[in-house]
Length: 91
Image 1 (spheres, rainbow, N blue to C red):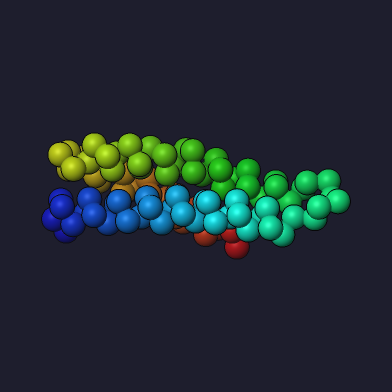
Image 2: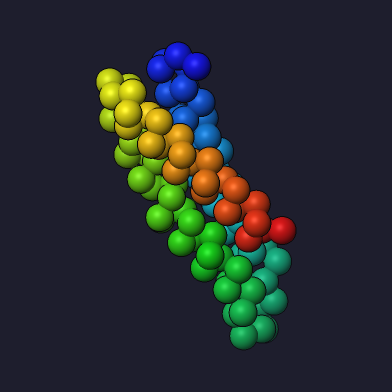
């Protein structure tokens, strides 16, 4: 895969991961029990850790990856790992 195409895939993956995290925040807020104790929000803890530890570094590598093929490859690994972890935690 060429560097430009890999960078485009990285940007698409980072965007999808960010939108998924925002979707989960919205989903939990809409389905939380208004009179409950708030344990529904515990589902967001692992997803937020994945976002902060995997997606956010991939965002920075995506921003700087347009000129560095190595940053693009590392960012792609971060984004793929984050996507897999999000699937595991969401299921």
